[in-house]
Length: 278
Ligand SMILES: O=C(O)c1cc(=O)[nH]c(=O)n1[C@@H]1O[C@H](COP(=O)(O)O)[C@@H](O)[C@H]1O
Image (tube, rainbow, N blue to C red):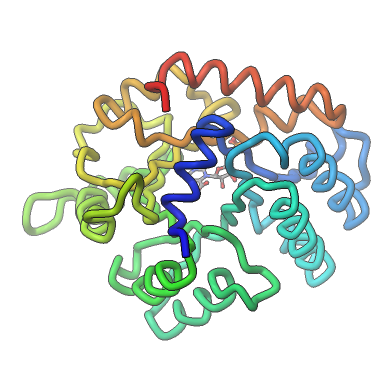
């Protein structure tokens, strides 16, 4: 069975280095002329799949925007995941899960076991109960060809106080996360299955990402103020591993399918101008 890293590497080679989020904010539903209800949610998600599912390497549904409609919203998330898989994009579910290990096992079963209705290619995870507590996710991902993207240096200004705090051995909290994920990817070619989330908004923080060996998801582009050129400052010599991620910047071009495609094409061109050819 192919690893997530191998599948992601191929998707990026074939479709380009781009992740687009499905974040159906109430404001975006209104902007698209849709009601703020499950019908609007369904139409919004179907339109994004139609526009981008067959051309973008990774699509990242943000679970919160589906969960806010309860079980009917989750049913639409399940259906969106199936549609994306049929269209050929990899699905990264943004759920930022994290808990004690025995509970993380259940989260792993929910998202990374192929028999689950919300099975996806990869999930986002939070390491603040200790990177080791996420081990059941790493294990199930490795078993079934899945991936896990762990938060390291997030795009929001509040993250720095926790993530850049210095630990007893002199490394920042974020650097310890980076180093532990790097270990998991050791020897994986062409790309490891365990990624990190590093916001494009954070500037040059001096963290060493050179040994990660896995993908570096870069949110914060567009609506949060960062541009493709900022990737150079944030990632330096690790640019080749970056997967830029946009949500509102692309989604606000909808509901017209051609306009959504044009917006995705535009940000991909911007990113390709900065990232090394892959
Ligand atoms: O894990 C993420 O994707 C993520 C991490 C992070 O540090 N910052 C961040 O904005 N995100 C997510 O990325 C998306 C950003 O959306 P836009 O600001 O509209 O592009 C949201 O779904 C966020 O939850």
